[in-house]
Image (cartoon, rainbow, N blue to C red):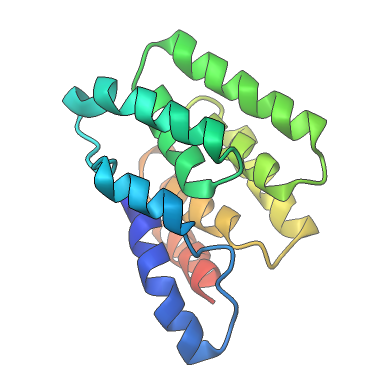
Length: 165
């Protein structure tokens, strides 16, 4: 999550230098303000109970917002298995009901990371194959390749470079 925030903060200046659009990374000013006011960048385990109702309210208000959805997923993944399964099912249904909404396809893929990571990787690669200009699957894949069972440092760097360029 912190990588996402840092990249989003840096990307506008990189885009100006490269003269490329940043719409998919520009945070909603209202969401950004809510994150700051509610200290939602604090991801300590003891802060999860305080954050959950705040993020749930933001998700109801901004259901398509990337930052809100990623924070919701982060919090759901820290809970009991039933919360994670409910979150995954929610995104599976959204992706299924909205096959042309690329953000829902990506949200579903991200929800699967750490539960069914191979399927998450397959979905992210599929998104990139059908829409190569959508940057977020590159960042998701970079994260997967940066640690654990799927660690592949050269591939992680390649995905991060693809995200940034």
